[in-house]
Every structure is written in structure tokens, then in C-alpha cells.
Length: 329
Image (cartoon, rainbow, N blue to C red; front, side):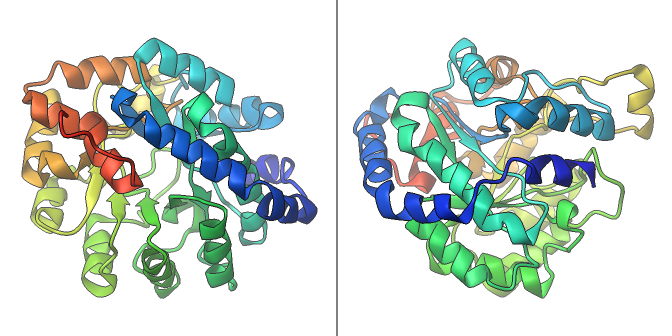
């Protein structure tokens, strides 16, 4: 996989991981406390974004764009995400790392943890990555917790391992024991060939078997499998995010749309939010693959109550992340 080679070329050394654990924990904790102290200023949280190191961002986005047939809205760097946030009025973005090689999990998480030392300044909070084929997953998750991560990202389609495979279930189980949020890609991946490795039924199976405490099924519970979401997930202990699920897809060429993929209509989006409950929905874009400003404007103009908008845009995310929620919200 070309993307794997691109990402591996930017991996830091084991020595950097040890230094981060020994020297930078206090700085991360202080940054988080400063962020929490101004929680009332945080009105919009994008719970699902992606960035790449500058030296590989262009190559990574080119490859992903070719695979998916879609155009990115930024260049995929932290700096461009910050510019997008400023334009859109997004106060905090959660970055979800891509992990394609189990041997590189710890190293990728070192880079991700460095981002969180300045979260109060940048407004960018990174989660940790993990891979189901990592035999030392318990150590990796324990280290992720020590590194101050609030959660982890899983992408079963990149692993080619089903979400309800025992290797994935044990990660979800132990992450929940550590009180880590688990965000998983759910549904079809526009850039990868079938089969789908995280169907709505698989999400329901993991919920029933593992009972995760902080599970988020991305892309409104299952991208392009949305008709199954209300029946299988409504009323269950799971959140969904709005990433890459509404509006027009920015195809590279007209031929790119030949598979018939489409986003939810405004009406179907509202119906799905109400079926799941607005208190279970997290605002998210999948930036750079969707435009933050467009998503903020689009969802702001949908027929939700002001209370529902507050929950979707920030309140639900704050509670999940452990940020204070003001009584006035």
C-alpha cells in the first residue's frame, strides 16, 4: 500500500517516545487544564479531522485522492487545518491518526502526542492510533493513556480486519477499561474496495458483546449504509459523528461518481439525528475531505432547535472529552 510507505517515512525514533513520556507529560496536562478553563469559549468542536506531517502531506493526499476519486479541501497540514478552523469558526478539532502498520503504532503516537502539548494554543487535539495486529496492544494502549490521549481511532478497512473480529474487540474492551474514547470508521470507505469491514451489524455486535463505554461510529453510524443505523443502533450505548455524510461530494472527475455513492439529503440527515437522539451526535467533517465552513453553515441552517445545535456542535463532545459544560449552554 503506497500510503503505508509514505506514512512510515515520517516515523520518529523510540528515543523520542521515551523523552516524551519523561519530560512532556506536565506540559500536556497544563495545556489541557488551560483549555478546560476556557471551555465556555468553545462553541464548535470538529470531532473528526486528519492531518499529515508537512513533508508527506502532499504525497499522502495525492494518493488518497486518487484512491477515493475525491478532492481535498485543504493541503492536509496542521497549519492548513488551523486556517480552515478560523474561517469556519471551529474552536477545537480532533485529529484521528492513520495507522497502517502494527509495528509503527508507538512511534506514530509520539508524533500525535506532541501536538497536544499546545492544544490550548492551536485548538487541535490528537487522538492515538492503534492496530489490531499489534500483539502488545495492552502496552500500547496503556502508554497512550500515560501520554494523555483522550481516545483512539480504529479503521477496520485499512487493516482488512472486521470490527467484530476478536482482535478488534479486545482493543475496544481494554480501551474502555482505560476510559479511552474509541472512534471507528463505520460503513463503506470511499477509497477502498469491498468488502466493508465495519458494517452496522458489526457495530451492534461489538456493543452487545463488549459493552464499550465511549464508542463513536463515524460517518453517521455507517457511511452509505444509513438505512440500517436507526434499526440496529438507536437506543444503544453509541455515539455517531457527522463526518463526510452531508452535502455534495467533491469528485475529481465526473467518472469518479460512477459507483453511485452519495451523501445523506438534508431531510434524511435530520431524520437520522432525531432517530439516534441529538445528544448522541457529534459534529464532524472528515477534513480535509469535507469543508469545515460548509458543514458549519449547512448544519446550522437545518431545522434543529437551538438546544439540539448546542449539543451537536460542542456540548456532546465536551462531555465525552471530559471538558466542563457550562450551565448556560
